[in-house]
Length: 90
Image 1 (tube, rainbow, N blue to C red):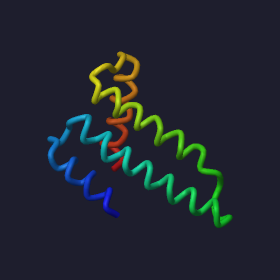
Image 2: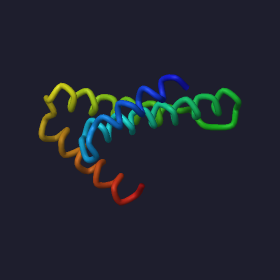
Image 3: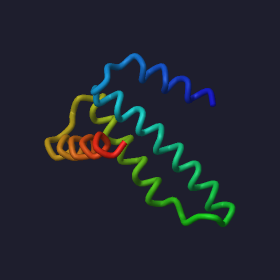
Image 4: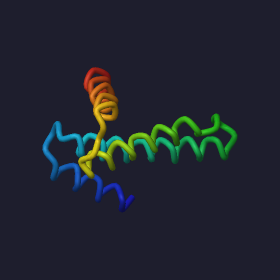
């Protein structure tokens, strides 16, 4: 898909370990998973994609907070926990 190349180019411009890189890649992945879940649900092969949609929204929200530079300590803690989980469970 054309949008995928935009995400890949952006990801390659950011250093590894940069929160913007991590959340950009994972936000894109979350929306891909949502699209798959919605398609499966439409075909009667899956459950409602509400949780997938909510997770994608949370990732997007964290990305926006990092890009704007205004994460609260609680949001930063959530990011750190999420980051640690993704490092140990790739």
